[in-house]
Image 1 (cartoon, rainbow, N blue to C red):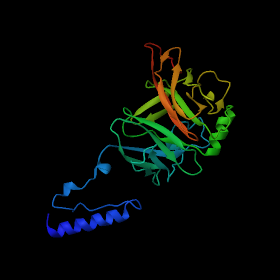
Image 2: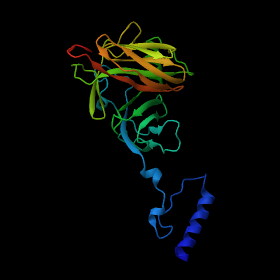
Image 3: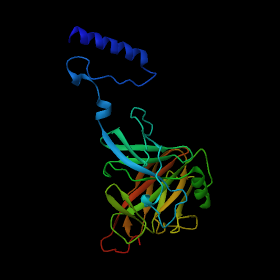
Image 4: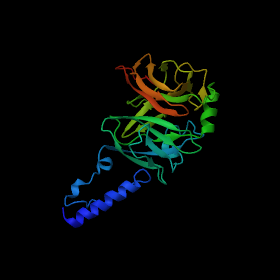
Length: 275
């Protein structure tokens, strides 16, 4: 290293010591003759996931899970939950985001936050690709009123789960959704159970897109809600003609954990399962 380069590096190091802890610092890659010595691993390593956020407050059965029919939400902060080492992203004017630096295996929770909207969690796992499903956010007022209509009272010390069960086969149902490049179809007629037990629910959502406490199994809409204390859980599903594996999930105080779903397999020859 030349004396001039050594002097420049010394100045840069001194500046870093002065500023560390008060601001992020980006140094040019010219500290020494070998530019590869610069550590860009935090920006370069890991998986980048992308997605879009929309506002489904006052959603209805006609639009159901079709995110293209709802307004996009700019300014949503998207983070890896409980991991401050990975920089957060923010949705742009089109409601889109790109979040870099995730572990190769994924299996992390993403958090979505914006003032006036109910904060949400989603478990990103390997196998769904790098394009996350559209995050369907709602206002806190709508979240509470929707749950209350099904008999679930607001509880600031608990969280909600929006659960569902899907089939990959087309069952001629209008309740369907894109997960990455795959289209999934929501399942009718299953029962869901949370272990350990939930505080309230499960409450299934009717084909009219209303929480209906009178339903004992899922309607054609194929999803439902429940309330639970903060912690780690397992969701189990049962259906007379379909096998649905259990899934693990997390509840965080004040959050809605979304897309707690099982991808089910219909018995061979049962063409009416889920209709």
